[in-house]
Amino acid sequence: MEVIRDPGEMTQWSNRCIGAGRTIALVPTMGYFHDGHTSLMRLAGRHADRVVVSLFVNPIQFGPGEDLEVYPRDFPRDRDIAERAGVAVLFAPEARSMYPNGFLTGITVEKLTDGLCGSRRPGHFDGVTTVVGKLFHIVKPHCAVFGEKDYQQLAVIRKMTVDLNWDIDIIGHPIVREEDGLALSSRNKYLDAEMRRSALSLSKAIRLAQTRAREGIRSARQLESEISGFIHSHPGTAVEYVSFIDCHDLEEKEIIDNNTLLALAVTVGGKVRLIDNGMLFPGPSNKK
Ligand code: AMP
Image (cartoon, rainbow, N blue to C red):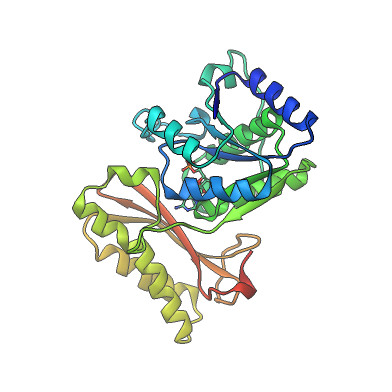
């Protein structure tokens, strides 16, 4: 596996690869790899001849007071994991090479970024779409793999790719979970034993909502208050949002139907912000 730090060198590598008739799959990440990341890498390997993983803790998608400085990092460990997952190139640029002095340009996707994490983290999705747009230009992938764990992010990137005529296939990967249901996340590293028990309330809440929907509840408002109450019954939890949305356009729903997705953001222990989501009626017929 090659480690490339310079964006220009990355593009030269991609040009050679494409010139030799090979396809490239890109997996954008912020590192501190877990099994979710490696599943994305393996899926990428099934869709193209070469996998490029970007590892970049993108400063412009973090707001003031967020965890940019303390975001978990372990480059040697990530390099080994990526190598074992069959990655061809780990692209790990420095912030100053991605955003040199005088950088003035950004990409904004409207509407889809209005709710959920978009309204709670102003500027976050502009940072995400701008860096992913840059990565698309630098790496020139034929396809790119993103996790459904960041459901709004995946929807926003799909829209950006279509709207800006990028000939890149955007592939979603289902959420990878621990055996007890906790969605894997680099931020789980911050959880002590008690916080981890409380963090389980997110996946349990999704299962509870699925059960209540199966039992016949259709009012999003009723379910919202039940689910918020359930999460808050776990010590140290603060609900940021419990939202029932359409899985295609992300619009809030009043009445639950086959296309309804429950999206959650919860802060645990006053500092660890976790997200999770799930379809209320899971099944092949209503998946994106
Ligand atoms: P991150 O490094 O957290 O920015 O994540 C990089 C990519 O991995 C994003 O597309 C995430 O949606 C995806 N990802 C993170 N955690 C999971 C998970 N538990 N299951 C599936 N995909 C994930």
